[in-house]
Length: 53
Image (cartoon, rainbow, N blue to C red; front, side):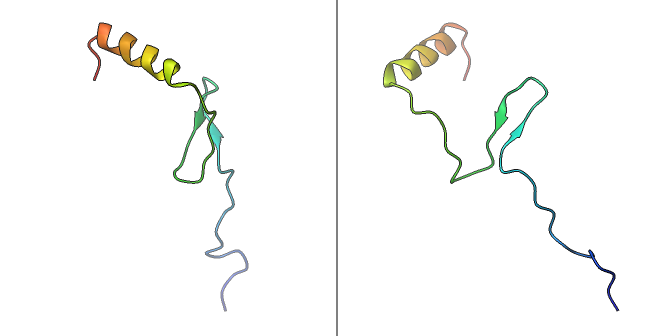
């Protein structure tokens, strides 16, 4: 006889928030805000100034 609840998958929220309030994505199917390419260009330029990969 197997105990009730043994090896039952625990449902967890698809999106989790970190302590700082950031949303953690878990893979394909997660939806994110669509931003203009100018936003990503600005991020890339800022990272380049900081010499970040």
